[in-house]
Image (cartoon, rainbow, N blue to C red; front, top):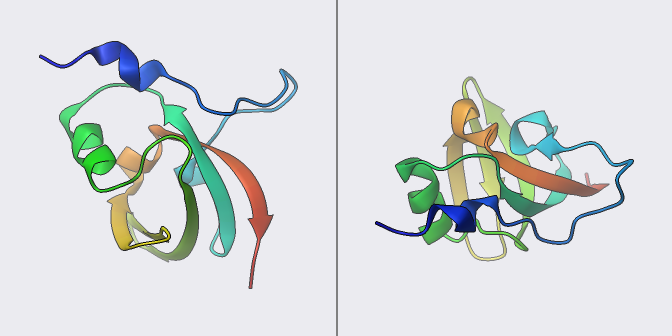
Amino acid sequence: MQNRNRFRHKFGQGTSSDSVKTLNDLQVGEVAQITGFSNHNEILLKIEAMGLRPGRKIKVLQRLGRGILVSTSMSRIVITSDVARSIEVKCEKRSQ
C-alpha cells in the first residue's frame, strides 16, 4: 500500500491568517494553485495521476451541476464537487 502521508503534504503554504480554500469554493474564472489534499482515498490517487498535484495551477472553466470543469496547462478535467472538497487550493487571480 502506498504511503498515505504523502496526501497530507502541503505545498507553498501562506501565512496563518490565510483560510484554507478548496477547489469546490472557487468560482468560474478563478485561478488557483493546488496546495494539498485533505484526505486519502483512491479517487485522489487517480486525480493526482491525471496531473492534479500540489504545485499545479488550475483554472475553473465551468460548473456543471455537481461537477467542476477545470483546466491545467495540459488538459481539462471534470471533478465532482465531493472530490473537489478534498483538494486544497490557494487563490491567485480571477480571469475573464
